[in-house]
Amino acid sequence: MTRSRNAGIISVLNHLILQVALEDFIHEYNYVAVHMKFRGGKGMAYVYFSSFEEAEDMVHELNSEMFYGRSVDVKHCDDGIV
Image (tube, rainbow, N blue to C red):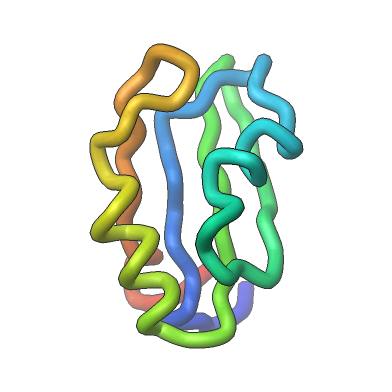
């Protein structure tokens, strides 16, 4: 685990979502990396940014947006631990 206040989590993804589709969804934000995890058909993506402000923009603007027919939950990583 690494400590990073510049990361956000996008959850309520399903295992059929490709990373390229997620990157298209977040393309206007200045992210530096995306790491996707899936368990039991549900998943989440850790999105890393070079600054807290850039992460905050994504969290504020994309929380509750629709992505492939599902509302996504977008938030900062708890305690900044990824």
